[in-house]
Image (cartoon, rainbow, N blue to C red):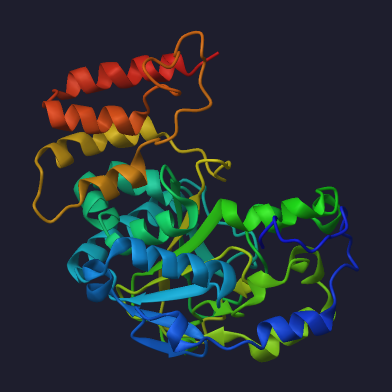
Length: 384
């Protein structure tokens, strides 16, 4: 997906772009254990990591390994027991169940981009809703080292976290296999209007993740994945063609997950949620969609409201929390867009961010009223 590759490509792609034999060669690669030295195992070409070892690893070396996997390898990593506090996960599940019930009663929510109506229950913007419903639980949840490291490995700092809960009900049918946001959420005709180099840019603007909130054996329908498929440049337009869909149906990989496992993958990996073949098991997953500071996140999130809710939690400085990870998952870490008449850079190239003020407030012991006033002033400065 490197847009600086010396191979000259046509400027425009269309619905017939992409060679199927080239695609087959790409997805027939194998993962070498030598390329993923931090992994504890490789299962069906997907490197598997141990959550405890992730936390103990040299972060730069691990992020380098994951960046290479996302770009040049299978495109997928699984971290076993990235979240070891199952009571914390269960509390988050209770919060999500309550939100689903409330939104059903209010006749809102639901729907899915790639699944039939009724197959599942959705919470859009579960990030903000979770934070406001239980800030302490949110902080414990997003303190997770694996979430922060994977996001930084692919997107760098100042990433924008968003999340959507998906509860697949017993008998819920599979999603249509697809690539994800940005180009994956467009019609073929619309995709073709973007020059070919943008088809290489789209995957580096987003990282997809999933946190397992329950044990998910294969019969419950965990995500279907096609390793290495993110490397097929023309895949956004080509994948709807019958031969690609048939290949996915025959060759996809589906790994069981346990509560506390976390999955991350390049959004250009061909994938889709599987069918829940059980009659009595609800598959609950919190889907993480992390956006680059240089892109546009799919969902609107009121980050000012979130950080105000989190401020007392982080101010109490619980020993088990990584405040930087929580700030990264909640606060706006990028200074633009802003109104440079109101918010000129002082002493640098860019004005201070919401995340900068959050750190300053914690370090200097501000009270909540002062923090709220500074946030309100920053929000005003960002308006036209």
